[in-house]
Every structure is written in C-alpha cells, then in structure tokens.
Image (cartoon, rainbow, N blue to C red; front, top):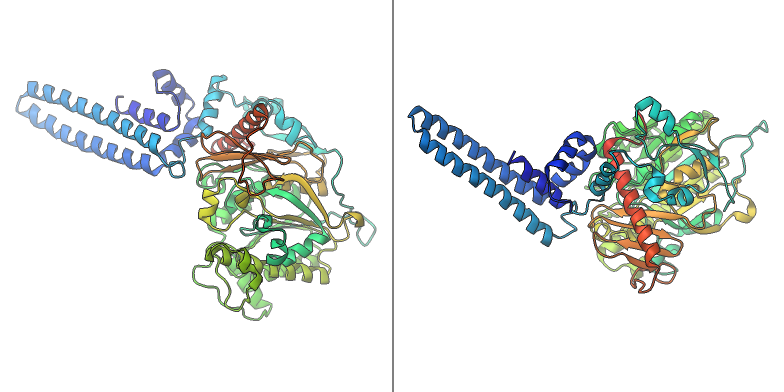
Length: 602
C-alpha cells in the first residue's frame, strides 16, 4: 500500500488536484472508468514516465534482493538480523517513493508548459465535479448554465432523449445526445431546392473539400489572398464566403471529426479517431446514408494514417480511395504521366488528387448515384515540397518571412491552381448543376512548430471557407460574404439544414449550429492540446484566449486582427463566464471520447 499511495499522489499532483487521501482512492477505485483517460494522459508525460520507470526498477531490484536476503537469512536461522534489515529496507523504499514525488513536484513548478502538457488537465477537474455531484455526468445545459442551449443550439429544434435512455440503460449517460427535428430562424442565405428532369424535387450532391494547412491570409495584407490563391479568390465571387470561420483545433484527424460529426476535438496529444477503435459517433455520414446517398472518402495519401482505413467504414463511408487507388485509376483512364513526387511527400501531387476526384464524380453522375464525398488535399502539407515543374509566382516573395514561409505559400498557390482547374472542369461538364461544394482549410500553418506554439491564434485556427451552389443560390446572394463567426463543427448542421432531416428526426451529439441561420451571439470554441492546454473562444469581434493557468487575454479582432494588443478594459464577468464555459465544454467532450459516451452502440 505504501507503494500505491505515492503513485496516485504523483498523478494527482501533476493534475493540480488535492493531495491523495483514502476517500479519494476509494472514489477512483469505484469510478475507474471515469478517471482512466486522465490517468492515462498523466502517465504519458515523458518526464513522469521516466521517473516512474526509475521508481519501478528500484522497487523490482529491491524486491529481488530482499527475497534473496530473506531466503538466505531464514536458512541460517538469523531471524533477528533479518527483521532489523527488513525494516531499514522498508524505510528506504518509502523515502525513495516520496523523493520521486518531490522531484515530480519540482518539475511541475519549473516545467515548460509546452512540454509537460498534462499538468493543467481540465478533464480531471471536470470529472471530480461529476463525482462531487453524486457520480453522474451533468447534461449539456447544466454544464454551461443554459448558455449552449441559448446560443450554440439557438436555431436547432430538438428533444433530449434522456428519459428513454434512462429506462434503457439505467442512467442518462450521454449528456450531448439529442434528437434533432429541424432548424429555425432567419436565414443568412438561401439554397433553392433543385428540380429534376421530371419536375420532381431532388436532393443535391455534397462535396466537402478540405485544403491541407490552408489558413486565412488576411493577416498578410488585403492583397494576399488575391495574389497567393487567385483561384479561390475568384471563386468567392461565385458563392457564399464565410469571413470568420475557424477550426476548433489543430491536425487533420481532429478536423475530420469536427467536420463530419460536429464535435469539439479530443484534447489529448493523439486524436480520438486514432485512440479509440470502438468510438460511437453519428453525424453527416449517418444522415446522408439514411437519405440514400453513397458516401465516399478520397485523399491522395495512405489511408492507414491514424486508422482512417478502419474507422471511416464503420462510421458510415461506403467507399475509400487512397493514393494507390487514385494512381491506378488515372493510369486506367490514360492520364498523362505527372512528375514523380519527391521523397518524403505525404501523398500524390494535388493535380492527381483532384483528377481522381473528378473521375469518380463523373462515374457517379453516369450511374445516377447521389453522393457525399469528403476530399482532402495534401500538397500543401509540411515540409512544403514544390514540384520541379511548377513556376512559383514571384509576387509571393513579398509575403514570406522565412524560406519555410515561402515554400508554404508556394504550395498553397500550387494547390489553389488545381482547385481552380477542378471546379472549372466540373462546371464545364455540368457536375455542379445539382451539387453543393464546401471548401475549407483543414487547419492553419505554416509549420507544425508554428501551429503548436501559436496556441489558438488566428494563424493556426482561422481558416478560409466557401460554399458553392451553382444554380441553387438566389442571384442577389451570389458573391455574398458572411461575417458571423462559424467553425468546422457547424458543417454537419449546415448540410443537414440544406438537405433536410429524415422523418422522425436524427440523433445528434455535436456542438455545431447551421451556418445558414442568424446567430447574433454565436460562439466558436477553440483549443490547442500542445501549447499548455490553450483554450479560447470568439463571439462577434471579441476573442478570449487562456494559455494554461495564465490570466485570459481579450482581443478585438476587427481592430487587432494580428492579436498584438490585448484589451486593457473589458467586461471581466462576461470574460470569466465565457472562458469557463469553454473550459468545461472542451473538457467534457474530451472526457466523453475516453468513456465512449456520445451515444449507445448499435
């Protein structure tokens, strides 16, 4: 027992929790399924793991030596000497255990929060609150004092199936689960219902295009988007542009979960889709499958990345196409050879990726297949390798601060070129006549280091977003720019609002709201699991950021888009309420991944 207590004590100290006592040990024992994700996260810290390893080695060697000592001493009948030395060994073990605890505490006091990322674990604190409330998981309204219901879900008509689940499962274990019936409220833009050849109403095809590492370029100046991504800039005049769109976190696998299921991402270092092979989620693929769509996921990369090849089929996708499949398809369709990718590339050049997407869309059209396709580009991924044959626009140099910056912007320009060619071909062949295209950056750039150290700055989280709906937008709305804040977590709700919800409603556990609807008080929530557990939120022009345990900083984004001058005067009560809401929501969602409590299994 004297070995177990210091171990738990170290975990709790690293989590900024109260010192261990017997009552808390008993709580952990009986509620281990709740605490397991947090204990696992604490143990993953390299400093803590190395100290624990040394501790266990010491205990193992000590036990081995002690066993030999006991055997030897008993055989020669020197029981007194054995008793005296056994007490000394025990004292030494206890001293060593608490020395390890002291070292951990010292590391905690001096640690670099960017490295020892687990010390400010909001999940653990939230779980303690849960146990303090009788061990039950609070529902989404309780967690945010009705703020989520009044703001984030303001346009959604839904019911909470808590009573039904309580009767079936014995407790209301799924705090964000609800049944969405529809959407309401004034619209920011309209999508006209497409009409088929027989004058019957048709549901549009859905194309979600995620541009690798594309960030909003306005911080580089008013002409940056026009010069670096001229195709995207021109496309904005033909659709609906979302001017204040965010990714809730970093890394592609996190954006995938937010886009498709409306969730806030996991706050551990590894994304949820990789960590939890039996994760139960329902979202956009579930909705479109229920409405008769063919669901496809296409990216010119190795789809074994983060277990995509295993997770996506079980989460609702009928067809997966990776780089090998696309290469073979283009050879079969007699596309001319393209320059071989450089060693170290994450996948095929975007030229090949977009050509493969185009060919599949042509096949689906020829077969009369209604489809949802989620496509991820790759050429603008770090380390930003440029095709030898690509002529980099010289005007880009004025925006580059470093060589890496230059290469990053050059790969954005290259990907933009082939995005434009893809949309042009689709328009020429009529592929977009009954199709909604949503184009977004999956997260910011320019480099993994900058993203990690950038916290939730706009350079890492503010991404471009554009909706194209040829022939489905009222003429007076084409080219409209929407300044209301939005995020990738809103995509599921937005598509559901466009294509409609199946009769009887749909199960939904996301945090998003429809981007078609007016939300004057809309809030987007942000988190960075790498930079001292940075969290943030934006409501209107006001953005609040808290890095670790530092005091929150408040920015006016319309006056200070580079986030250089925190406001010295602001509403302290509102700031505290918003950042606390963000902390609890981020913590709750991350906790639910580990407990697999978004919804019951099939």
